[in-house]
Structures are given as C-alpha cells and as structure tokens.
Image (cartoon, rainbow over all chains, first blue to last red; front, side):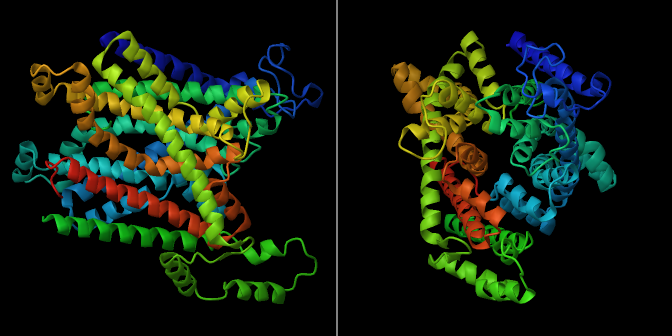
Length: 274
Length: 308
C-alpha cells in the first residue's frame, strides 16, 4: 500500500508543480497575457505552426498562451474561495460546537437549507441579480461553502469538548478562546485540510462551469471556462479550441485530488472525511 | 427520544427548510429584473403606463407577501399557475421533470451496475494492481468538468463517428451520451463508497461467522456483506442527490436536453418568475424528501443508530 501512496503523492505533486508553476511564471512566459489577436492565423490547427504550438482560437489568439494565463483565474478562485470558506466555517463551527444553544440550531438549519438548493441554480439566480465577475464568484462560493466546514468542525468539537484534556484545561481556568483555538482547533485540523484541498479542486470545476455558462469571469479575461465557451461553436471545425483547456482543467484538478487523497490517508486514518 | 417524536421533528424541519428555500428564491428572482421590460424590449415607444399595465396584468404590482402566498398556496394544492410567456406551467414542468428523472435514474442505474461489482472487487483485492487501477480511474472521473466530458463525447460519437444524435430527446439513442456523462461522475463517487464500506464490513465478525458456517463466498459477499454496506451507500446517495441535480443542469444544457435545468436557465434569462420558482421549489422538495426518506430508512435498516 505504501508504494501506491507515495505514487499518489509524487504524481499529484508533479501535476501541481507543472500547472501551478506554468501559471506562476505566466507573466514572464507570455507578457502579452494571451490577448494578442492575429486574424490572419485564426483557427490554426495545433502542431502545425511553431509560433502557435497548440494552435489558435477563432480570433487568432495563441491557445497555449491563453491556457497558461487562464490558469491564474482558476487557481485564484479555487484557492481564495476555499481559504475564505475554511476561515469563516472554522470560527462559526468552533463556537457552535462549543457553546451549542440557539446559534448551533441556526447553523444546522442553515446547513439544511443549503443542502436543498443546488449550487449551480443558486449561483445562476444570484448572478442574475448582482452580475458576473471574479470577485462575485469568489464571494458566492464562500457563502455557499462555509457551512460544510462549520458542520465538520462542529462535529469534531462536539466530541473533543468531552475529552479529558479539554476538561482539564477548563478546570485549570483557561479562557474559552484559548481552549478553542489552542487546544481544540489543532486536533480538528486534519479533516479541514483534506476537505479544503479537495474543495480547491471542486471550486476550479465550478468556476469553469459558471464561466462556460456565461455567468462567471469576464469573457475578455482568459480563463479555462471562457476558452471552453469560445470553442463551443467550433467543435465541428476546430475541436482543439475545446480540447486543450479541458485537459488543463483535468490535469490540475486530478493533481489536487491525488494530493487530497494522499493527505486523507496521512491525516485522517479513521475516515471522517470520506 | 421516542420514534414518533423523532419523525415528527424531522418532518417539521423539512417543512421549515422548504418554506425558507421557496421564500428566498421567490424574493431573489424578483430582484433579477423586470419581466415587463423583457416583454416590451422589441416594441418601440414604450411608455411607463404600458409597463405598469403589464405589471398589473402579471400581478407584479401586488406586495411581495401576496405574490408569495398566491404561489405557495397554489403550489401546495397542485395549481402551478401560468408562465409569463408560455401558458400553464403544469404540463411544461411535468414534461421537463419527466425528462430529468429519466436521465437521472438511467445514469444512477448504470453507475450502480458498474460501481457495485467493481467496488467489491477492489475491496476484496485491496492493494492489488486492479484495486489501484480502479482507484486512479475513479479519481480521474472526478477530475474534469462534466460538461467538457459531454462535449468530448459529442465530438467523438456525433461529429466524428456520426453514431449518436448530438442533442435533444429523440428516441433511446439520444439518452446514451448524457447518461454516460452523468454516469461517469456518479460511478467515480459510488465506487469509492462501495469500496470503503465493503472494506469495513468484510473485517466484521458476522462475516467471519458466515464464512465459518461454510456459506459460499458468493452468498457471503452478496447476501451478507453487501446488504450491510448498502446502508452507507443509500445515505451517501441521498446526500449526493442535490449535487446530482445541480450537475444535471449544465449537462442538460450541453446536450440540449429538455429537462428542469434547461427550463430553469431559460426562465432566468426571460425573468419568467413563475416557472423558475416552481422549478427550484420542485427540485428542493425532491431533495428534502429524499433526505427525509434516507433518514428514516437509515433508522429502519440499522436499529443501533441513536436518535439525536
């Protein structure tokens, strides 16, 4: 089993190093940001022109450049929204689980409500009101996802608050804040980190779906979902416009899922996050 | 807590959730824009009086609580009202719901037929080469956008090979690609659940007893172990039902499938409040009902579960 585990880690790390590294270096690799058009070379097939190794899109823009630059949006949305949701969810979950009472009730009912509303439909309605955009997408994902972290943390706190070491800390007269953040939180971190990693992957998929539907990122900014939307009408004549950004999403998300799975085995041997 | 009290409490919670969801969605959709403007956007010389007349005709000049009450009381009694653009909602929504359920249930059936035997194989041969191949495939299946998989299938089977229709609902052949698209993702998650729960079950003492009794391996696995693992699988499927419905929305759009997702997207762009609030309320009702049934099933299947 160990051999496979390290394979998972190595494969995931290589994928993320490749995709993440390319995205980090994109300002130097493609200083024009993948926006330069060359209508004379529009819809160049891949592997036929050295200047455009992966071909060009309907406006004659370099697909490789747009793919690398477009990754910025995916990583930004995925990481920022996951961190935002983890931070809010953790604080709410800690207090709800420790103090119980009306806030706990409120949290659990709120979670029920969110469970009953498919995210994509919620997102479509809300974006129809507030309009699309990078900041709104991130905000929407945080609002939609903090609850699952709060539930997770609440569950851990419910069992940890009965633990002897916590009761010892209480009888020692430590403040609730200190007990929550110094003594309980570190013991509830494992599942949080795993779920967070998997959620970055999931958020990248969600962002690309929303942008594909025209409800996400501004079409002028290169993004993977936007490239897929650009290619949709050219699927018969120029399938490469659609194939490559999809592969970029797949390799990135697969890398994150491999790392998340590996983390799960390291940090959560009892399987709370399965 | 007595069992009737528990059931009563869960039903009350479900009703509360439904009221909250329908209130939220009815209110939110009214913030997205004015249907009167949408209706008259192609006519010239629109006066504010024209707009006001249309709003009055649609009942939009009433206070929100009156509009909500009319919607929810009709919804409960089965009178779904009239769309702003397309006539009575009942037949429109029931057609769409039929198409969505057909797609969802076909995908689910396919995914269970694949994931149960493969999951059992992976659990029984834990750590083997086959187990690891299955694991990699189930991770990969969760790693691309489902609409992209749909587009790739269209590219291969409609554009290149010309075997299957690319869009719409015309005969059984048009069901294949959308069902496979949804099925791949469902199979990936179900496989992991079956494998994990079977691993737990196979090490339990009652399995040792069944083997010691000399039962055939087939009977041990399918009669004793699988039945026990099905509790976790059913719970998980119930929890996933909401995201299954969400995933269907985008896939329906790619294949131009005439289901609830396509209907919802059209309704949002036309500001057709009555259709959108009906579609989302029905989806929410189904999700809540499935979770309620799963809760009760769970209790019936496993008497050890404490009522909390």
